[in-house]
Image 1 (cartoon, rainbow, N blue to C red):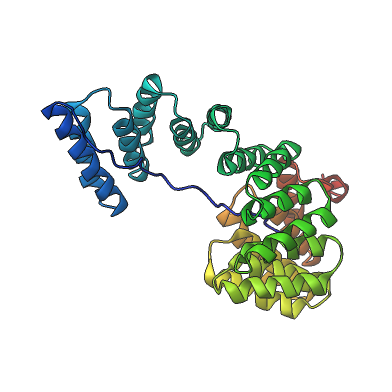
Image 2: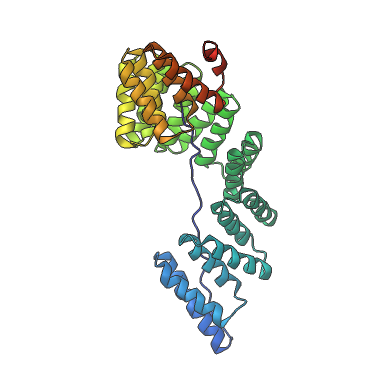
Length: 344
């Protein structure tokens, strides 16, 4: 099974610029001083010190919207998402700055409120329609929600706003791939790689599109380049193994699945895929062991039950095979009914 990833590029939490105090009261001056110290500590990644500074600034000036925003940025870095959301709610009541909505969208996404995050990216874009990063982030959420056409529309807008946005080209390619537009996907991956030749995941994704088109040699070349750029890229090893499997190079496939599992021993897909290759090499007992390992890691891995049942049947264990196929059926594995004809 191939795994297709978005680039997972994200915009970091950020602080507003420092401010210069002029013609204001002593408490306000102290608030500005604490605020500026907070900016310095945030930029130095001294987050606890920054939190203390912004606390002081807000204590001295409760309606200090930029300090509330930046304290939210610190809390985001510290994974206090609820606290960050509360600060941003208050900041937005004081000032509907586009960056406040953008930051609250990031916080809501971290809290798994994807709909709320999309709404805030939209509000941010209503304030400033030229934000490539907001279109990109909203497109990524739409991709996760399987709204691939919607995600393409957002990635298009991100690219219009930022023509050299390599990540947006990569992710638009992934959305096109999900819509079975392999030529369009490959064209976008080509552009992403042209803009940034160091993006290992773009080579991996292009390899998957080429494999889908039956260009196994081209796929293997792309997976190999992804591995060259990222030595521990276990997903690319797994995917290269599947391409070798498709070419009938079962021993080569096993070698790649071995490497994927060496890097990530908890990668259930590689166990299942290695089982398929070992089955082709007639190493039946090892194939059962690999399916079992995949199931242990993911008890709801329906295809691993299907495959283990096939191997058990070859090992003349019809009862065990039927048990596995019935479990696969309960997990809604497509095409399983044909295997159950001889099961009581």
